[in-house]
Figure 1: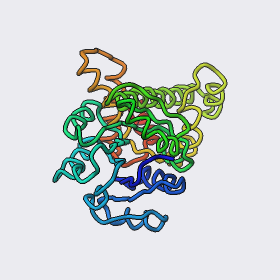
Figure 2: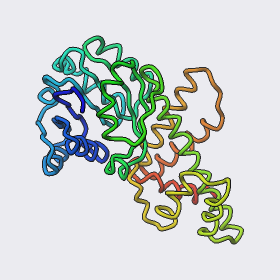
Figure 3: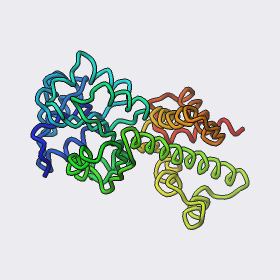
Length: 292
C-alpha cells in the first residue's frame, strides 16, 4: 500500500472514472473532482467521494492525479489560482493525461519544488481501464516514481519507467503514432482487397495469421469496423491529437519523418471531416470515401 494519505483525482470521464473506482477498490484514499457536475454525480453514484471544487480536492493532498483531455487544460487547472500550492509540500503530481512532453516539462518547472511531477500516460482504452490492466509509460525522478508505484500498479498490468519528466508523454505519442498508422494500413488493406474481390473477413483472418498482424487487425477491424459498431471507446480527435504531439516533437527535434507527417495529416483531415468526438475507428468511413 502507498504512504499517500489523500489522493486528489482530477478528471472523472470515460477513463478517469474506472481508474478512480479501481483505486477506491484497492483501498486508496481518493477524493474526486471533475469540472462537469454530471461527471461528479456519476462518480458519486459509483461510490467515489467527490467534492465540488478543484481547490477542495487538492487541499492537503499528497498525491494529485490528472486525467484530462490535454496538457493545456492540466496547466490551467493546476496553475490557475495557484491551486497546486494547496497540496502538501513535496506531493506527487501524477499527470496521466495525453499531453505534449514539452508542456509537461513546463508544468514541472512551474510547480517545482512544491510538487514533484511524474508523467504517466496510459494505453489500453476504457476496457483495460475498467479491468485495471492498462499499460503505463512513466517519466520522472526515481524517488517520486517509486513512491507512486503502488498507485500505478493498481491501475496497470505493465508500468514502464521511460526516463526523466516528459519521457512518458513522449512515449505515449510515439505509441499512438504506430497504432494510428496501423489502423490506416489495416483499413486500406481491406479497401484494396475487397476491390479486388476478396472477402473482408478473409483479409483480416490472413493478416492475423501472418506478418501483417497488428493491433488494428487483431482487436479493431472485425470487432468495430467490419461489424459497423464503431464503438472502441477512443475518440478520433484524441488519436489525431496524440499523433500530432509526436509530429510536433519530431519538428522540435529537427527530424524529417515523412511517414509520421503523412499519418498525422490523414488523422487531422479525418477528424475535421467526421468530427473529433466520433469513435476513432470511423476513420474507415473517411478513408473509404477518399479512396474513390
